[in-house]
Each structure stands twice: as structure tokens, then as C-alpha cells.
Length: 242
Image (cartoon, rainbow, N blue to C red; front, side):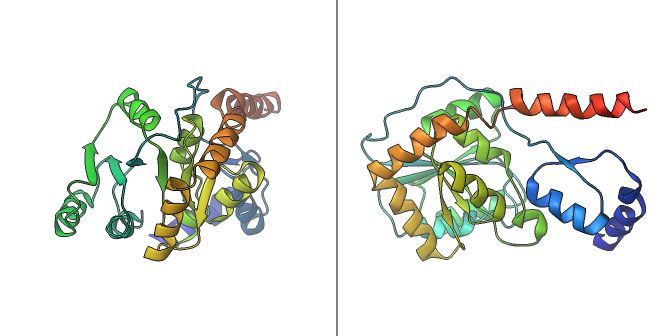
């Protein structure tokens, strides 16, 4: 399958004049591979006007994962880490190939009082859960360039909801975090790495408040109102030159 898509890419992409992708890392990969310039149009949410919740709330802290439940999302590793930390609860919004396996693991690890499976949620219900959570979760195994250069929608959803998050120390997250510091980055999915990140955010209110204030600034930048202007300008250039 990979070879087939690579052949299609080699045969078609170098012939294109106008191209865009979702992040700077992929832009550079495609430029090196196909000698074609790509614009970057990020997939970010609409602007939110929600105010920040009180980060000094009483325990437990609520973690939220939103997205598909499939291989490589770090959820098994996160559940194992939860057996070693107190005063944390995890809500999982979504379903997927690992739904049954993750529910079985939850029972096996005796985490029924710490982990709640929300299933599929409407956009409105998901937004409500995100606003009520304390920490966003966005973990990935390095299973290839698609994951390594990813820039997940949920990362920006957490920013819009003013929720500090835990993300992988992959290029796109690292680049944005250098500019705005809205999250704690982990180098791997080892239990000690995840436990350290969880404790850092849940037990350090000064750091939590700092990241939350940074989210207030960052969410003004990463909004669809701005990205849509770039997309409209992109298509204006296409039609003006046809």
C-alpha cells in the first residue's frame, strides 16, 4: 500500500503548481521529496471566548483524551501510568478498533474508578467535556512520519478551551511549545515519563496557571478565522492564474 501511494505521489505531485498541507514539517518533507513548494493551512478550531476555569480546584484532576481509539495513541501506556498516581481521573471520548481492548484493560488494572469511557459525543457535548477537564491528552507512538510530523486537531481544541495538555516531543508540538509553552512534552511513552508529566501538571499550580495563561494568548493565533483567510488567498491565487 505504501509503495502504491509513493508511486502515485512521484507521478503526480511534481506536476502540480498549487499545493498545501497541514504543517511546516510536512511542507519541508514534500519540498525535499518532490521539489514543490507547499502552503501551510492548519486544521484549527473556530475562536472560543470561554474563560479559564480555576486551576487550583480540589483533587481529583480530570484528564481528557478525545479522538479515535486505535493503535499507537498511547492509551494503554497511560492507563498503566494511572495505576501509579493518585487523584487523577481519565475520560476517554471516542471509539475505535481498541475500544473493547481498552475497556478490558481498564478492568484488568482495576481502574474502573479512575477511567470513564464516554463513547461517541456530539461536537457540543465534546466541547463541554473539554471545558470541564483539567488536562488534555495527546499521545502517540513514533510509528512513522505520519505520526512523527502530526499536528492533531485535539492539540488546538485544548488550547481553545484553555487546558494545558500533555503531548509528544515531536517537531510540530515542540515548535509551537517553544513559542507559547502551552503543554508539557514527553520524549516517550515509558511509565516514568508519563507519571512525571502527570505529576508536573497536577501538582504544580504555578506551572499550570502559567500554561493556562499562555493558552489565552495562543488561542488568538491558532483559529480558523485566520487560517481560512490563508485558504481563500490560496484559491484566489489559483483562479487568478488560470
